[in-house]
Length: 296
Image (cartoon, rainbow, N blue to C red; front, side, top):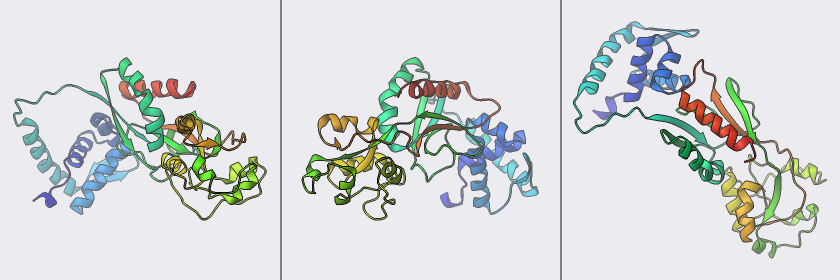
């Protein structure tokens, strides 16, 4: 039975879109983004192997199958909605869904989140994680923090902050290789690689005519890369907010005064352009900009 049932959230998206004749209005009613609603409709159509809407520009109309299916869906949803639940409270909870890169979430967002919840205890925050540079679609979230170049078509983006990148290694690892006193001495070290923190821009600042390393341990999470440095797997690039605690503890050391003042990637706040934005989402965005643009 379960394998034959379409997802309930897709059914509710279908019903709302059919009632309003608009994906955007239906998305606002369901407190999700228009792209998330479109994703739910596609999921339903894939499950049914039938089209339920005809899309013409921004307008949508039901197909013949969609009109017949809508009657069944409405009856089913009405039955579920009207079933008595004596122990179920129904508060009108304000909620903001935010998607974050793991390292930003761990080192920067969570330590500061209490200041938001103290000021806005009525707004509930839901946190989702994604890998930067790979998952580039706003789906269930209201707001995303993205780590990248800042060019995200069809999205409203604001730069949060950018930090210089510098080289670190663990003291124990440095004991296993020839002395590292100049950038050129890095030829003796294993350079940890990441698409998020490429070496070649730092090489240029350091006066090294070296290509981007093509071999060695690769980690596409900046927090994981820093852990790899700590555990002696090699030398890596990092930034102050991520590495400062380990530097203070002596777990990693900075190798040179040289730093890349404007790395190719920075943190950006991104959200879809909407005619009207829910007040709690606007409040959260204002707090993010205040918190991270004014000296994270």
